[in-house]
Image (cartoon, rainbow, N blue to C red; front, side, top):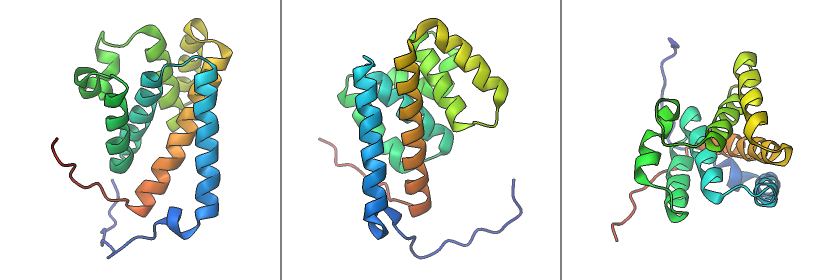
Length: 162
């Protein structure tokens, strides 16, 4: 824990708005990652689980909000979403999902070489090379979006109840 006193600023620079050309390039990379996932046959629910788990690890409220709604639209259950942070301690995720989640976490914490090796070893048992590549690209993309939203402090506003 840091001893630095945090003094909130009135407003952060929304870097996506400040530099739209850079943001459009990031969007294009994310779209390509999504296409790689679809081409590899990854289910959209699995892609959203990866997006959510990475966003949980990074503490990105904005992306958690966006991807929770997306996962629910794709048919994900509230039970699985509720325990996603503790996915290893449940029986709710199949081996492919577990492998993808471990790879996503290893991508988010690349300095943990042991976790990387363990995740890759498990992934090799249940995922194809195309699926591994797609999961890694999805995780890389959402990590980038997390940084944009965290550093811009994108707001999360209440959603009207329907």
